[in-house]
Length: 132
Image 1 (cartoon, one colour):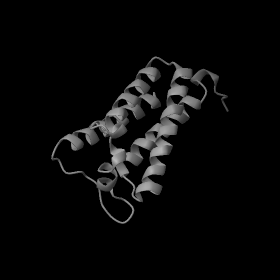
Image 2 (cartoon, rainbow, N blue to C red):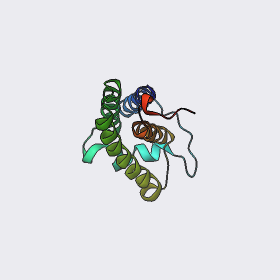
Image 3 (cartoon, rainbow, N blue to C red):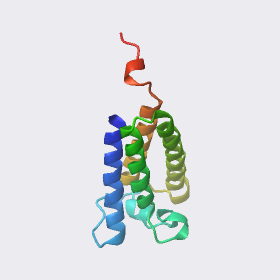
């Protein structure tokens, strides 16, 4: 259930970032020397492969598939899918910190949700846990 809730939260964040990308709605994010969502979201890494499609659209798809796998209780496919998401999130964190020198708090929240889904997928099913 935790993976489903994290997925729904991830979808919400990704939808918000997609709406901001395509509209004139101002981005709700503080800007200082380290935290600067605008710098991250206006970089070349904010779109998929040089297209006009924001990476947040990929986030919507990734979190939706995660929710489906979690709802179906397909643990191994969810773990594999979450591992792909985690590798992607780690790459994006590298891009933010090393390449751009700025961090987006919305992106960080999404990355944390990916990690949470991965850790949830790693944990044993409810019936397999040792009770103390």
